[in-house]
Structures are given as C-alpha cells and as structure tokens.
Length: 78
Image (tube, rainbow, N blue to C red):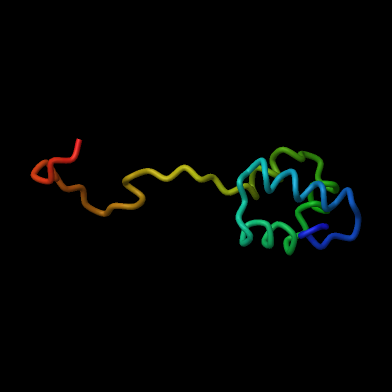
C-alpha cells in the first residue's frame, strides 16, 4: 500500500527516501511533489545544489522563538 501518489515506483521511492531522510512533514512532501522536485533534480546539472535549495532545515535557535530573553531563576528550574 502506497501513501504517495506517483506515476512510477522509482518516483514514489525517491519521495519516500527524501521524506524519511529529511524528516519532511505532509506539507513539505506535498510541496516537493507539487514543485516537481524529482523532475527538476533529474534535469539539473548540479543535483546537490537543487536538492539543498529545496530541503528545509529544522535548526531552531532560541533567538528565533523568543523575542526577548528573561531571567527566570525565581522559578527554580535547573
């Protein structure tokens, strides 16, 4: 049973592989399929660059989440 709608098994396996390797959610996988990532990588000269442009990094820093930092020592958290 396949959860990914693809024309061929090779295309489906491509999306499955990269979804697992890059921890893509449904939204990321759908974006990859709709943007024809498989076809673009197949046609590109520099495949690594094309793939790196598409992959979303999950590096979240505290500065990205919190606007201001606060000193919370009074809570007793360690």
